[in-house]
Amino acid sequence: MVGKVLCLSQREQVGVDPLRLDQLYGQLGESGAEEVICRAMEELALRLTRAERLFRQGDLAELRKGARGLAAIADQIGMTGLSLVAADVKTCIDAGDPVALAAVIARLMRMGEGSLTEVWDMQDLSL
Image 1 (cartoon, rainbow, N blue to C red):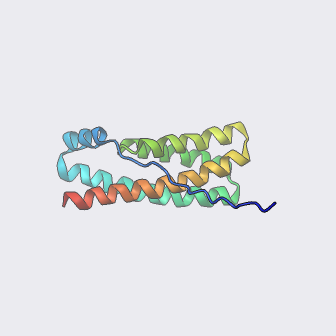
Image 2: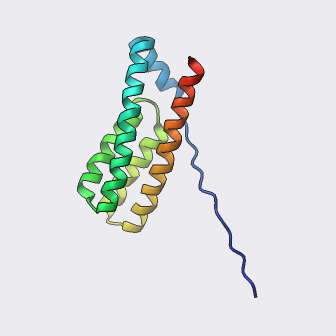
């Protein structure tokens, strides 16, 4: 019997909460909101890179702290999905589940990249 190899595509449903962005624009005005969003996106990119590095190094205490901060920043600019996945990183660390943590870190990287791309694309459309 010859088996077939099935290749699974890993795609994440990314999205940005438009209501959260509307709130930011309403509270801060256009230039203020854009500044906050740009700063947050830069910080998210740095924290995602750092999270991956900390995971590879096995520094779970720092990874847990970083994931908590990443979740807060993502939530601030309406990246709810990314925020939830970052919270899942903390859950896996707290549960002591290295297999689940590896899977969630991979998901965090996919979700983070997709979320950042979506926000950049949204900003390009508004120009």
